[in-house]
Image (cartoon, rainbow, N blue to C red; front, top):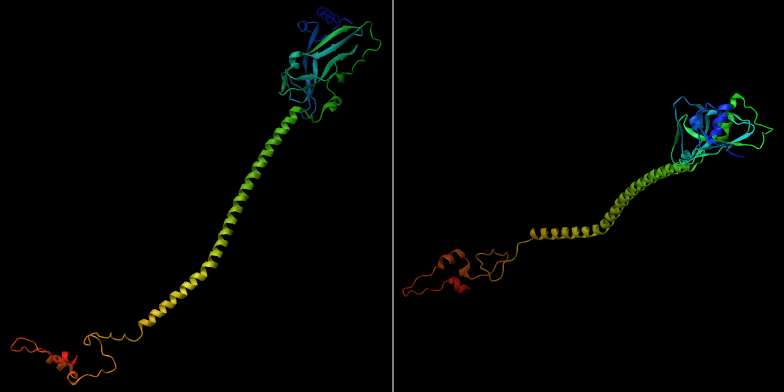
Length: 304
C-alpha cells in the first residue's frame, strides 16, 4: 500500500477532482493541506451550530471540544484510502484530534473534525487557515463496497453530531478555574467570619469588664461601708462630748491663786475684822513712810 507522492497527488487532483477547490501550492510533502471551513460548534457556548461569517475567527477555550469542517470537498477513489491529521504547529498548542484518522474509499464531501483543547490557553483559528492534512495511499484492488454517497445535509454539522459532544466538560482547566473560584469565595467567607469573631470578642470583653467593675464596686462597698459608719458614729460621739463640756459649769479657782484676780466662790470664806471691808483695807494698806525710811507692814500682809 504505497503512499502517493506530491506529483501523484497533483495529477490525481487535476484529473479526477480529488480536492475542491484545489490550490496547487497546498500540495506539498506528499500531502495536501486542508483549510478551516465556515462552520463550528464549541461545547462551552450555548446555542446551535454557528455558521461563521466571513473573516470571523474560531476560538476554542481550554478543556473544550469543538466540531470543525473543512473548506474543501474531498473525494477518495475506490482504489485508494486517505489518512487525515492536523499540522504539528497546531498540535503543539494543545489541540488534539479526537475524531477518525482515515477516510473510506468512495467518500465525497467535506471532512468533519472533532478536536479538543488540552492546553491552558485559548486556541484561535482563522477561516481558510491551513490546519488539517490528508494523505492518499493505493489499495491492491478497487474495493467492492465503497462509501455510499452522502446527502447534501451531511456536508454540514448535524444536530446528532452536536448532541454527541454537548454538555459540561470537566476539563482540567475548567476544574482549576472552579477550584480558584472556590478558594476566593472561601477566603472571603473566612475573612467575614474572622471579622465577626473579633467583633463578638470585643463586645464580650467589654461586657465582662463592666460586670467585673460592678462586682468589685459592690464588694468594696460591702467591706468599706461598715468602717465608714463606725468612723462616723465615733466622730458624732466626740462632737456631742465636746459640745457638752462647752455648755457645763465654770471651772473652780486654782488653790493659792490671787483672790483679787479670781472670781469669788459661792461659799463665804471667814476673814478677820480687818478684812471685812476690802476697800478700806486696800486703802489703808498703803505703807506710811516713817522718819527712818523703813516701811511698815500692812494689815493685809499680817492677815495673811
